[in-house]
Image (cartoon, rainbow, N blue to C red):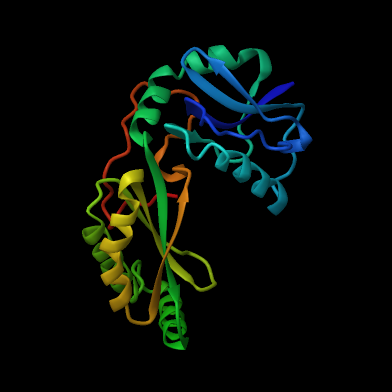
Length: 238
């Protein structure tokens, strides 16, 4: 049997309501291990990742969005049932740093969406140019727009990710936003959104801070740094 991991939580929300069921129909159980609450389910094996199972996972994580500090896991993270205390003990430093880094914060994602066929033509030229160059012609413009959002947001924790696939999303910027600053954040980036040409700037969230926590499901590292400000030219998160 395995302990399926949804999130690590510092102090469960007072108004938390247990979801009706978790992955594989298993009960969702908050289990305190030392000073951390592990939100998980006991299952034999992880079902295949499908839109339904992914949505179920995110719904369970979302049920503790009001926690003082929340470190979410991506879909499929498990630990052998009897090994959970030792697993956490081996990652004590990483867990403490991750919880401290996201305390009283949420993630906001600002999507950059194509608006018209002019953008389609730019992307088509970009795909052709990629065969001759490492940098797409429209990439500087997208980075400039992302940079303007970052400048206006005035937050130290952020990351830009250009889209590498089709569809209308051409990029996104993730921000780690203190809860009391959510309204201020939206008002600060609003002028950039209103002046963007050919691209819609669409804030979404708040979300659990998936982009700003270390991959704790991997083996513990000797040295772990808290998330830091990201350079838009070479750092991507999400």
